[in-house]
Image 1 (tube, rainbow, N blue to C red):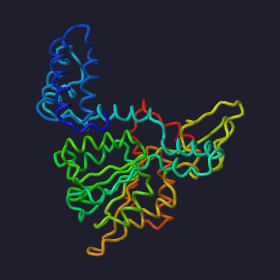
Image 2 (cartoon, helix red, strand yellow; image 1 turned 135 degrees about the vertical axis):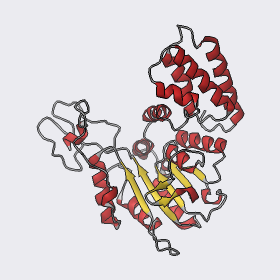
Image 3 (cartoon, rainbow, N blue to C red; image 1 turned 45 degrees about the horizontal axis):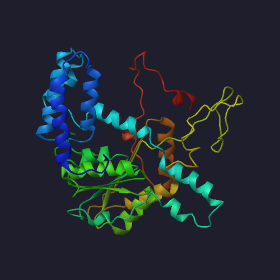
Length: 355
């Protein structure tokens, strides 16, 4: 239902689900996982209001009746805390996103196959971009701007832009985002359509815009078109490049995309080949980010680049690239620490060990 903006439809779905749960939710044939699957999908769709509150309360009753052990989940449903930004809902979205094809890699591969039979492949590269004057769609386009590059379903921006969201003081890297506009860009039409529909139903599309566009395009448009200043650029969890290793050595050059001698790949073949080929974060991208984040002349305050990655080697690589581009990095904000408190059950990720 990506792109559906009619809140009445979602209210009706909540009402139907609540009625069905009241009818059969306490029967032995209805397992706790079935109840959770229903409400997780509704929460991940961004449902709100009286109908949503009712279906979550009914679900909590069913789970409690069946002796479901996670009291925190039941309590969150009973008290109205369960919703889009709860852990279970975000995990559902993440699982769905991992099943989607990586758009940039798909377009590049398709273009290479098409090139032999066509003299003009520009339209193929542009197939995922849409024409949008997003800078004119804000209620107040003079407010500071936050840009999320590769925003996916827009979950982060939806939390930051929503004034009712309980995400603390709304400060990200010293930037008070409570008085900002937000724009996110991604090549996935499904993700962008989903985020736009939620923003519309939540009534925050006057300060949040989501666009099908490349990272470079959204930064260029922000530099050339946006009337206000850019305060924050976020690059959050970019798809990591391959870190290829074989049984004899973990030392591989940047351009080595070979496989072990036994012929079995020991990497995810859908990942970018290396940090030079196919990886979203490039020197050109960081240069554009640096240009967009030039100091606000009224306060002489520089903007911030926020980078997050679950892969330590990727974070270190991007940090080095950013410093080489002209950024100054805040050592206090570079969170890659081990305090000795890790449990025996938790192991170091294979990628980190290899690196």
